[in-house]
Length: 510
Image (cartoon, rainbow, N blue to C red; front, side, top):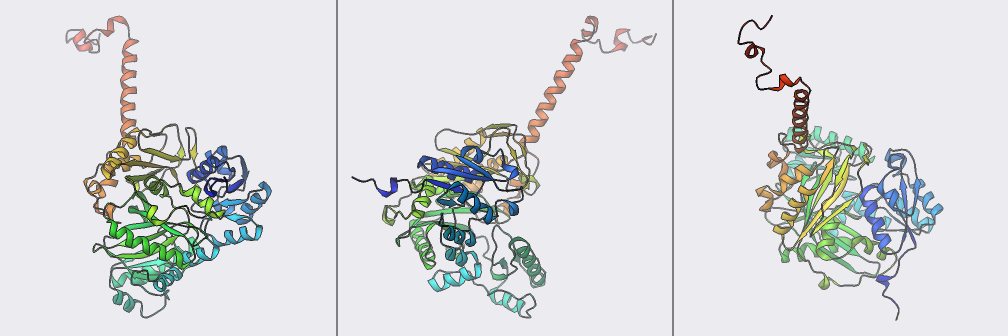
């Protein structure tokens, strides 16, 4: 009896076109499947963990990503030289670049992800918006691309209703976004958004949409094969953010009912099928206070927060990406997908939350990762490793699972207490405060959570500074004792330090 395609090795060798924890994550999945791996690295990543874990590693250039990790020609050269049959892009860098997908096709190498056409369709927010309207997926009321010199900007904004949100068409990660609450701010905000979009993406196209007050950021994980099958794997709550970038995610959302889950799951599948999607992807929605959902965008790649979905569904999304890329059909239907328990992810980042989340790269002098029941740490560092200043300073993704949300939070609080990273400031202390904050415990979340609770990012109880103070006090005490021990024996008695007492209060200067 032949083995089920799911258990066959889909490729002999895979190149991972990424770095850090996600490269390590993909390498581990490949090794479990018996697949040999190829890593690429810049000069700044010579000692990185993903380089040590892979079977082969190739240098692709200087530290700036524009000269290394974003160079399609160098990636393809290594793929051909190493004999890799497929390229997994991870997330970030070239993961949503249709040109890489096309280059793979031309070279006869499999791209582990959707088609170039699907990425082009969903990568441009204006095109994606139009495709969703045509597919019957609700979108936030908005406009076509804006002309900075148009005389009807204010009229369009008033028609939508203030506040409005300006968004870069090719944007991502909060780049090229501006919230505008008054007419007088509109023109300058549009110029700023367009300028930032041009600098970040080489495209200054900006459009306008209604800004939904106190929304939740809810996203749905989808998985589609090349045989017409598409599943939704529950939703993730991603509302705790800074500068439109996620910090904490959980699955499932504490407010989504089974009925809502089925509704938004069907919408996500519609969105994926509208662009003939293949592989793992995420459809992101805004949820209004009234329970209404609006399509935001589709991420045509593996998400940073994919582990929480894996913990709750029991499905390894990276392995399924590889199987789907090799033409293996999904082995289950929507009715087979069940959510068990609750999972939370905290992004452990080398940054200081009390200083506007300023990056804090540096060398890790000591590292103790948490473990125990329901704890998973997807990391890419080690003691002695230097977090480079050239890239996103993420250290790891700490994930906990519990039979319910309360247990998942309790385990996360405990795991954060166990986590120790010496030598640089990290987001651990910030996450500790969130896990013990009553609003978070109650599930009262929205994308302005940190603005509403500024006490979470205030300085004053920085644990690293407290540790420095304790060490300094201990050193001072030791030195005082050392000085006392080296004095002549007669000077160690009580009161020996006072010449006035020693000479009876008079004549002591003789």
